[in-house]
Amino acid sequence: MSVLVQSGSGLPLQFARLLMDWQRLHGRSGLPWQGTRDPYRVWLSEVMLQQTQVSTVLAYFPRFLERFPTVQALASASADQVMALWAGLGYYSRARNLHRCAQAVVAEHGGVFPNSASVLQTLPGIGASTAAAIAAFCHGERVSIVDGNVRRVLSRLLAFDGDLAKTAPQRELWTLAQAMLPVEPLPDDMTAYTQGLMDLGATLCLRSRPQCERCPVQAICRAHESNTVLNYPVKTRTLKRRHESWWLLLLRESAAVGGGRIWLVQRPSPGIWAGLYCPPVFDSEAALIGALPAPWRKSLRELEPVAHSLTHRELRLHPLLLVVDAAGAEPLGMEGAWIADEALHLYGLPAPVRVLLRPWLQSQQP
Image 1 (tube, helix red, strand yellow):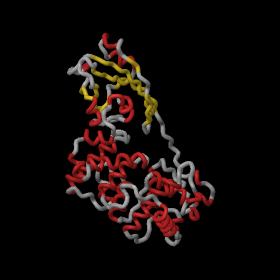
Image 2 (cartoon, one colour):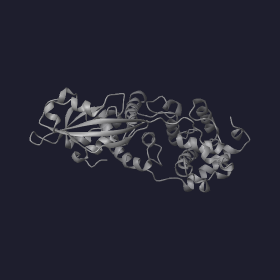
Image 3 (cartoon, helix red, strand yellow):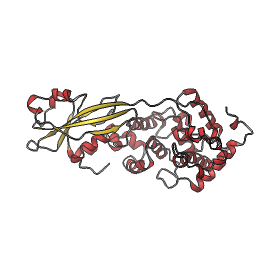
Image 4 (cartoon, helix red, strand yellow):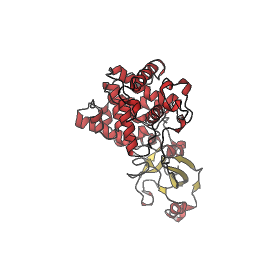
């Protein structure tokens, strides 16, 4: 363990006090999930905020709570209802785990979230940092979050040069994070400390443009002292991104037949957009055309491609529109269903698919 956090160094006490004082005066407040010790609301906000900007979550959080005000309401919902409301937030495994977790809380814990981080981690989709946030905010447990922002803050504060692409340094930093906690904190102290870590990483200790001149812990930050702030955190492994092109068949009923319906299939699990609804996907334009009866091929109309970024992939979607007189029949033997325009908002649609279907979407929900 770094000498900086050994007994007698004084750094943990200084850091905790400076951070809590700053948060109480200058930290973020007034967000809809703040000022509560309701584990359901804290949990929901923590999951939504994973790899998602606060501004985006602000639009989804109240709508989700209105539809599912309690963990019991969420647990009793169908997977399609949950995915439809989550559509557009991305990282859809979060929604699937959210639903599974709610069901586990109801079935295994009587509808009450456990009050310790160690037990919270046994629930689906709740990792160590999310568990710590719930336990600290709701129960005042003395445990530290260590998400991406916090790793950056502590790496710079301690000049921690372990490679965070590797497991052992990650564990070491986690141990250091626990050593930096305030001593014998009151529940309100843990709220201020935990929120302070989040706020510092999100507003001042930024990845490429840190605002050190405004940082409350600048005087005790080793990276700032040595003018090496941008050297931390150390992470040697780079993300390898794949580029893929998909061809989507937008199959519409003609107005003469009934109109107002489009053919959608549910994406398989596991895989990209698992459980969501999407037009049929093909690996190539030739494969899409080859799947169509010859008379239909001449009616295909190419639409503007849509680019979409995922964590590990860059997708280029090539939509081809085909209007057919095929009401009531499963087209081309493909599994799926005709979905009426006015019902599209009830289905979980990936964000780029929502863009493609925008001309026919009747709902004003994002």
